Image (cartoon, rainbow, N blue to C red; front, side, top):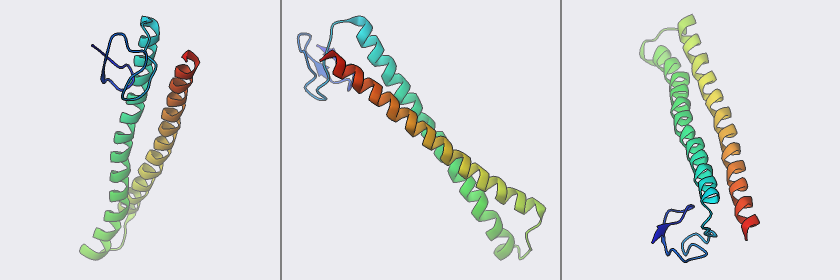
Length: 122
């Protein structure tokens, strides 16, 4: 038994296709290495989204909580520091949203390249 390079499920050594994901199995080590490399690139690009999501949440919290605290809790008007923190929160949110968009595009391109490589082998 060996593992499928795409979905990592157990497959027979003589199987030509994975029973779980349908990927073509090959004995060529270089092709398997390429598939594993592509999977790692996709995984790393997807992991970046978690970081960007946390930055976006911090941005939203800064942009929403600072004005709320200043106006309703402390009953002050917004001073320059409060406006700066609010603006920084908005920039964090927008920046992380843009980065998420770029990473999603990169993941999509990597998946298409992986699928294209799989189709060429069939």
